[in-house]
Length: 193
Ligand SMILES: CC(C)(COP(=O)(O)OP(=O)(O)OC[C@H]1O[C@@H](n2cnc3c(N)ncnc32)[C@H](O)[C@@H]1OP(=O)(O)O)[C@@H](O)C(=O)NCCC(=O)NCCS
Image (cartoon, rainbow, N blue to C red; front, side, top):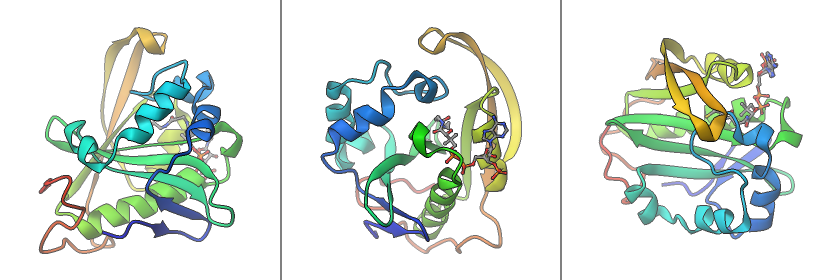
């Protein structure tokens, strides 16, 4: 498995000991309120836990692959992209620090990550979920070819109360990398898609 995925402006790579940078990026309600699983406030201890999730632990936590997103020129951390398993389905999640929004970074990172997943695994369908107010993320998913599959309500007290979730799917397409004969995502996942 390639440890690094390079795009024109970004590097997707394993997270490193970047705790203070993570806290600076994630201890931000405007960022956290539209994510599903990150704690708020996001403390140094949360950053340590996030960074301590090495690939073996990630498999236990159902996170199959996590890439930190860094700027290509400086290698400065700006976000992350995750592949995780929920209810037997492969799911995509991502975040970009607020000061870097609106530059196309989420689209660029998620597009490269999706191609990597299709190129290295037998996963033929990716799922994603967003809160319906999250128009930026909806736009990212649309640009990546995800299609709306439905909406449902959840109670999310840690995200401000009842929220409506929109579910998206993205099937492997002819323009995507072909399905590999064997999964090469890494020994950590064992996920066969
Ligand atoms: C969602 C998120 C990842 C987007 O990151 P980003 O790097 O700014 O995204 P991009 O620049 O690649 O694309 C954003 C798109 O949304 C559009 N957009 C942004 N804010 C918008 C708004 N308020 N209304 C309509 N469109 C909006 C942008 O114009 C762009 O679309 P375009 O290329 O067609 O112009 C970022 O806002 C974030 O991390 N939010 C918090 C975490 C989160 O929501 N994660 C996703 C759920 S898993």
